[in-house]
Image (cartoon, rainbow, N blue to C red):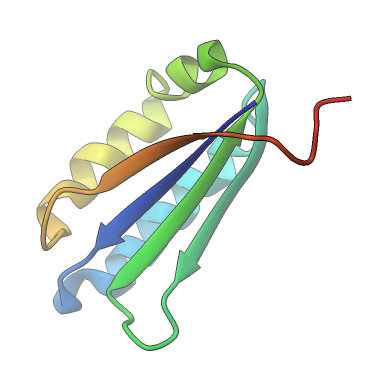
Length: 99
């Protein structure tokens, strides 16, 4: 299982639009084959700081996600709203263990 934690810093004037666009991406992503989680978190003290926690069963499911229309639309839409490019760090999921 693969988990990716993505750090996103959004310009203040784009925070609300980012939330709307990211919710749309989230709603489609959780329906994908191989998706285990797709959580969106907003920092409690810095409203422009977000963490996306994505978990997929396999590398193939991760790759398939990056080819979906909803992801590509989100990626291109939100990129100019960011203070700096987003940073995604892949992790190997230890627990919960695959059944």
